[in-house]
Image (cartoon, rainbow, N blue to C red; front, side, top):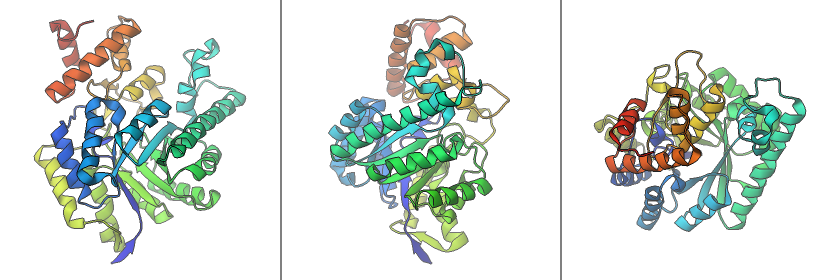
Length: 392
């Protein structure tokens, strides 16, 4: 066996729990975190901003000796960076979209401009507008990267929807951010990559960025996340991000135990620091609870619970849905946003409410989700509304 250096980042407790219908209660997450730490993975990502319970979990795990493992996934905002720092973490993963589709959708100036109301990147947007949106994003990201490093945090940058971004713009981002980050994480957010494209894409990015430290975070919408990740490693990435069991949004993430064992069996490569005997203990724990990812192409894989994703679906169906058939199913839970209720009332019921009412319902369903240790389907939320458990 040959030992290779590869940073393994676990997202089971963050991206994994964002699987619609899945809920980990606090003690389960604590148990899983320690079990995952014993596998030797280098990072365990948790998002403190989701809820106070997540913030408490981060502080607890750090107090229990996992300060060298726990990394805080953090939105691009000083308030959230400060909140992560207060939790006691030394490392954060700052994330931001880099594809034209998501950048155009979320750019504050574009959202305020009546000329672009209701439009998406597919509506023949002028190049000068796209260029402006791109460079506004670079300026915003650089501002926050500089701030995070200034206050003493090590920063990993997660490039959301990198697989659908413009190649030259992606190269520009990698080169601009490199002085401030430990690693640039390339996300195939909606799982559109293929193995053949992945190898060439990674190879070329490394060549054009002078072998920058690149890592990958691939989703499994087409059932190709494992082979895509293997090809990325063959092409030269220095890190892999995924979840145990492959759980996660829609059809899930790449399964870390499959990547690690795949490299070992196929190529005779063992990742430095990994305790291979401990991998099965994590997957066995998930299996005992019946926790599995949704199959690629299935209707269950069309479920969405995360607030930011649902908000984007409201304005651009193709933002997080790559299949021409079927409709997204909206779920409600700890990871929901006000946009989940906006989608319910405006798209499903055709009865718009006020922003304040959406926010109130979001807060109520988050608390109910934590209290009952579960998330809720659209049908269940309609019943809760009818029975008065969720007050408008």
